[in-house]
Image 1 (spheres, one colour):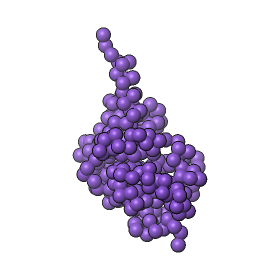
Image 2 (cartoon, one colour):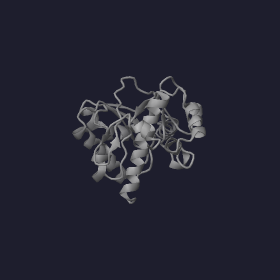
Image 3 (cartoon, one colour):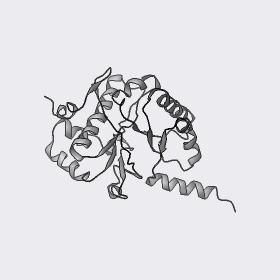
Image 4 (cartoon, helix red, strand yellow):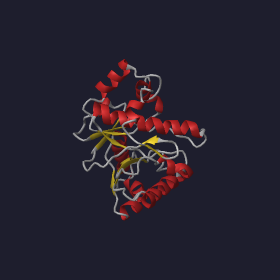
Length: 235
């Protein structure tokens, strides 16, 4: 048996590609998001969540967490267990998925997200927030396979707010979730935009449907909000 199957066998295989299910139904929610590279902020608050919203090279690779799990690398696993010891919340990693990449590669990255999520649940005891990620709107349905029973999901708006095409995709994604994910109650957002109005506008349809939209602060968002407010000061 492959080493990572000790984790996936604790879940259910679902959908077209037999991806592992994740369940997040927490009522206690994070109030700050620290990036993987911001280890000094992992416990900035009692309810800090860890997010992997950086270039993949920062958290993936030969000695990344997925490879440590897959190859059962005891030394690397000990490093990650110590690094994340005591962490209460974590988003599944934002492995890059690209529309111009082959489908097999994108599905593999989806698998990595779920395997790492299961590791955090069973080895760290963290609440895992499943991140919605997909290479194109046409494929969103089966990239959500395995999240049917999660009432809480995560979304990142990084790179979407100030790009008209990406902003339209973000809005369509939210519309799809509201229409097709009937048990969705809470969306937790990683957002770095300094202008809160534009981000809030994208999620209006979710709020109108009774879905709570939580946008915890993070280091970059705080900096960008300060810059935006300063640039809009009236004298």
